[in-house]
Length: 126
Image (cartoon, rainbow, N blue to C red; front, side, top):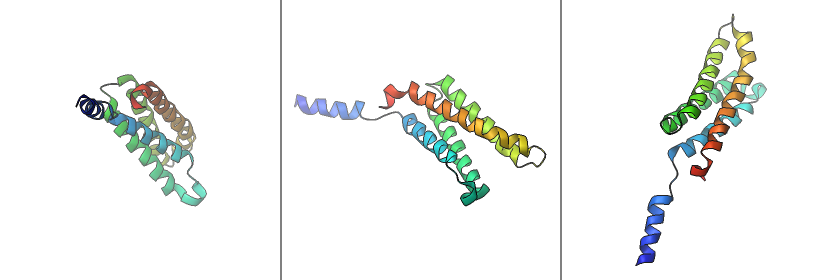
């Protein structure tokens, strides 16, 4: 009987991970996918779709973890906002060149912020 109770307690209490663990993995995967977009095959539409997935993943992670990890999620939110602003500016002929030149660094910054979050939450997400 005690063995069954222990097994039930372990499965009920210790088996699930916080939602932000999955969200962090999704953000990391979407940033990686963005860096692998082949513009000659997928075109601008492919890049835009990949950027949208990154932004959606970043928002989902921030929403899931901001109360527990405010500094890390603020860094993710800031990096995602800067990327979104550059993508929007790239649509304007007058600001396109500058905006497009900033996007790689902003994707890298978002990737670093996501990796920092993953590192900081590793013990809770393993």
